[in-house]
Length: 172
Image (cartoon, rainbow, N blue to C red; front, side, top):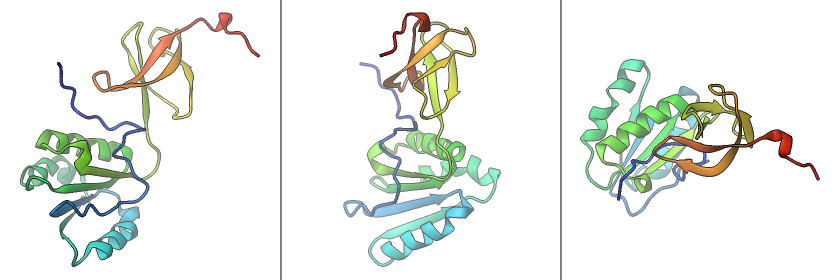
């Protein structure tokens, strides 16, 4: 059996609307890369203050974001990770966390702004970004019509796009 590392995608189980305290975890690590959400982070730290041991890392520049792996590597086993960031920064932090040994169960992610969605064309093997609500699209690479399937491929890092001929689609 082949293991595929977890990937952050628009319907990921780690994405939450609001952080919740995990009482079964000894330590909490909060990584905030979005200054607009400072109030939300402050409210969450007030909620857990005195209840849990926690560490807050505020990322204010690209250098800190690139060195986040060091902070993740030194965490104790069983630490709960909370990520508050824009999509691209959240993907970077999430990937570093998985590399450091965190599981999806140990991560909660709050996305500030829009999420991104990708579709993988099974005809030409091209990955492209699409609007989150689209059900079909045109492959930018091979120009074929694709129906976006409900399945996300962790290996391909996108939803599977199935080729179809729109001329044969009948309307009801």
